[in-house]
Length: 151
Image (cartoon, rainbow, N blue to C red; front, side, top):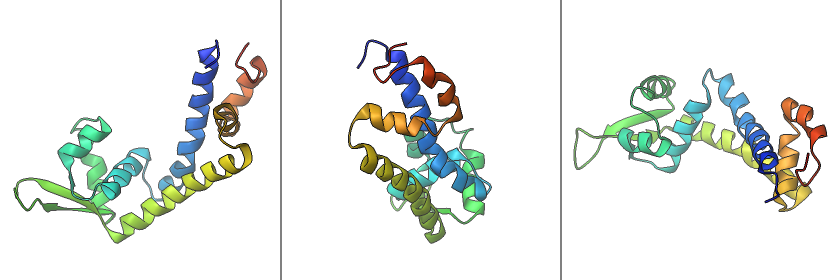
């Protein structure tokens, strides 16, 4: 880390925005948002996860999940079924359509990261800087700092 951690924070912020934007554009074409993507991602990776477990993983409240789950079910991206050991507990699974969408979303992010790694290797500053450069706001602060994060 450099002596100016504000620089690292800015790099990370703008790089993260670029990373999530790669999938946001795709999910928005389906009339959904980032929360739908997060739900799909974890339901796909953890088939049979319960709603309670999912909320814990995502660190959100039950109220915050209802409409997202409803939308994912209505779009036939997920389904629920009773747990074999306790029929009151509902387990969540992605449908084939949901799995295809997750693959498409992940592919966009994987492609972006692979391009950056191929071009810049493993240097954290180079990777974060390249991802940050995609953001318009980063262009406004870039002249204020040099590579080492000193203003």
